[in-house]
Amino acid sequence: MKKTRLYSAHKKEGAKFVEFFGWEMPIEYSGIIQEHMAVRRKAGLFDVSHMGEIVISGNQALDFVQYLTPNDAGRLDANKAQYSALTTPQGTFVDDLLVYYMDENTYLLVVNAANTDKDFRWIVDHQKGFDVDVLNQSDDYTQMALQGPKSPEILKPLTEIELEKMSSFGVERGAVAGVEALVSRTGYTGEDGFEIYTLAQNPEKIWDAILEEGNKYGIQPVGLGARDTLRLEARLMLYGNDIDDSTTVLEAGMRWLIKFKKGDFLGRESLLKQKEEGLGRKIVGFELLEKGIARPHYPVFIANEKISEVRSGSFSPFFQKSIGLAYLPLEYTEIGTEFAIDIRGKRIKAKVVPTPFYKREEKR
Amino acid sequence: MYPNDFYYSKDHEWVKIDGDNATVGITDFAQKQLGDVVYVELPQPGAQLEFHQSLGVIESVKAVSDIYSPVSGEVIETNEGLNDSPELVNEDPHEKGWVVRIKVKDKAELEKLMSVSEYEKYLEGLEE
Image (cartoon, rainbow over the protein chains, first blue to last red):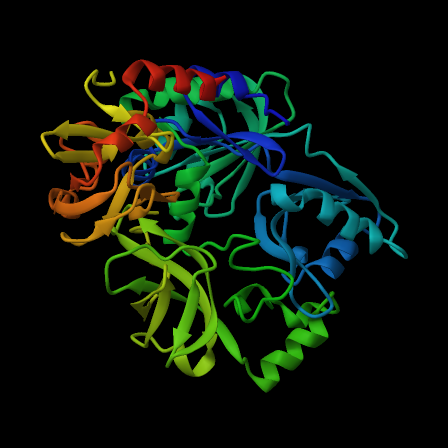
């Protein structure tokens, strides 16, 4: 099993580990609920070095990224990152990802750990005709996420980067705790915060400095357990649960990331057609109206007919109830529509609710 | 850590015998494995349980886990406190976090369970 460069730091913090797609990762430290609430109210620090980093470089790097992804990478510059996807010709997901502009001939794609090898092959398989090089740098990068309302105050004394000029998805480069890094105002929790990437051999200097500085604000190291509950409350998609190669970008409710006007890209025709003809189904957020917890793959029923399955489903530490995501036929996606979920043989009532379940109060 | 007068199952339930009745819960090891408990599905009083039959379900944030009855008999009482405070299973697994009381049908079955020293040895084996 692969270990991140921060493995011994997690051991020191008393982490419980889990195998996650070939990586030995912290699942929790003090407990999922406590870590979850620390991120909502104060701050949390995550090791997300298992994420994949794929670099596309060459004269046609931008053209190639434009071809692979539905968002408009032409709008990026050294100070702006972007959420996007790798799409199939059918308009479904190979993966979702972040795109960073490194220089005019170099783009960095940050992809899911579970998909890194598959994505790399997908990209290489489609590079014919483009003057580009594709490099899988996943094992070289350490990635940390500092998330929560206190994040700017904690990071500020550790770096010369002017954090206050970074808006959402802003990118800056500079030293953090004396270690060269790329910092973006991004995350996977629904809170303000930063993701920090470094190729340095001593990333634990950043990790230790953030925990030390954050101590007075109540920072906690946070594992994959709370990362999942945080992202679900914020309705951030998880590949393999909510989106996959059978769900289109439109069905997943991400019309906003498709820029049809930018020109051709993989899946453009299918998505355009689906947009014009209308959707048969759409992803919705739900909450349970009775006791129980809806978990992934539990059957979803409408009028005694099995319609689909729960995609993501969990207890929400913030709202103290069971929430989740499922695809429903379009006519059942109105807010307030009731349906049922089979939990161990019992039909439990659920209701379509607005998403994101959790939205932070904007201060910036 | 583990009370001397309890019996223990391989599935990490504990049993405390008081006359004909057994109080049943899950062990400290089990609650640590599960993490934060958020919901406990309890059986109905009067339910008849076979040895190793599922008597209820414990849900933590990340997992759902059956509780297997370590004895056969009739459910006479459940810990209603767990409805409002499921976290008692984490905070005090061997006392306030008890799950059910069962009128034991056959005390000879207790021989299938482990003593505290046997259970501690069993845990050492698991942690290796």
